[in-house]
Length: 207
Image (cartoon, rainbow, N blue to C red; front, side):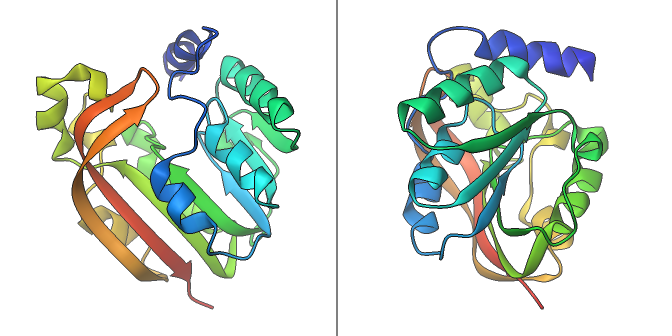
């Protein structure tokens, strides 16, 4: 995990925001339709999405393994005059409580393949009944697009990417309002640029 941490610290240490300062478009489209409450952003990096949620009135918690990511996130939240409870560490070391959050946002939260399933199942426990998940991440079909253009970003190994079947398995206790695999054009900072294959969904936890 130290190598993983070093990789993200290296990416986030520059002054320019690797994925830009604007929120993800899918998140921006859908978060405004949910009544604000307490929300969690895992693998939040430089804080663009968490900061946006805070401007909408959400009480925002976030975490990442990168200290450099947190520094950038805190600077961005200060720019917008909002508060983030942003912790550095792995999920199992943080003191989040079962059913603590009204919403969970996973935007390009690609975890190492060896812990991917376990982390998703642990994160689900933190959501209240009737709570929400907003998700966008690269699909297993994205590898072909990455081979053509590395600037589009995403993990280089298929195990860290997602299939719709995996999603339905991880989130079996949820009602899916939408679930799709789509080809989209990304323009998010320097590290998400070009055509890619993504899975997106909005789901609500069953009571």
